Image 1 (cartoon, rainbow, N blue to C red):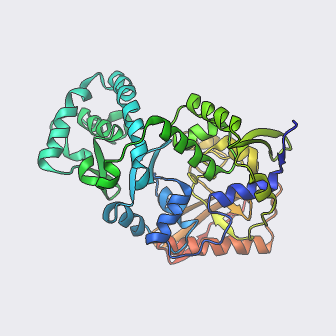
Image 2: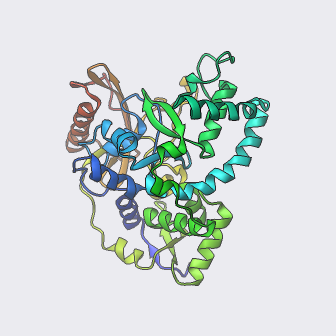
Image 3: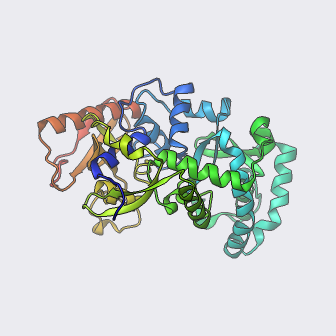
Length: 400
């Protein structure tokens, strides 16, 4: 390749810096400081699994260890500085970005109607008007408040949604209702015009502006990316739209093409802003602090990119039979400095943070200093989880 090369170590440091993991996790972790973290990341994925803490709370705690979950609730429910909607998954997103989601609402309207009609047999579309009218006249509600008399599965999972719950989710995905608040993690919806502040509700952008914003904002947060990675970041523009944006921006000199070195020495083409290579080469190594990350942390969301950049092959083994699992079904990635050093099986059990196992990555030696740094992070995680002590199972430190 006759392209300027970004070596692997500076690439990792740049990537971690753009994701808020190259600096010490200090700061109040609430109010304007917390909003700054979310805005810098772009969004925070929301997930219900709660073995230590919920995914979104873990993501924020990893960057601000004084953060506590009520602070995010205040931004969503009280201050309306963020809203909940879809990126690649359900996420908390800065409220200023809401107008750009209008284009996604329209795209999802037909796509979801066709897909969910096949799944639900068309029943949910007949309920859309009834559910919308119910919210308009009787106020905010959750999925358990609609569909009286409809057959419901025992678990309430995706596979056994009743028609009115599906209608409610369809109204949310297409922008007619919005998440007003959460009650024990259960979404409570109201009409969008009652939830989104008028200055954001009434703003509109042409689709071309949204495409340019989405690609620009994604590249800002990734540091370097292919057109496919730009499209996948918000899941707001199509791969074709991102590819056309990259071609036009490159032709105009707005972006440049570089070669990013992977951990195995291979090179991968990517786009970056001019000056990014010099910025990355000037970065110093982050401290040796150990951090426990959420499995849904944005630095690991793209599993293939994490493998290329960090040599970390991570996946959640939820659907793997227990006898075939190498690790526990939901283990937490562990990072030290700019490297991934292992994964840990840790759970909150009442007042105890129980450590079942830690698997170091190949070639990672667990000397006393590293074990002490890991223990210090576990002590901090115990405080965050509301535990009074950490307990280690016999044989918890596994072979690498």
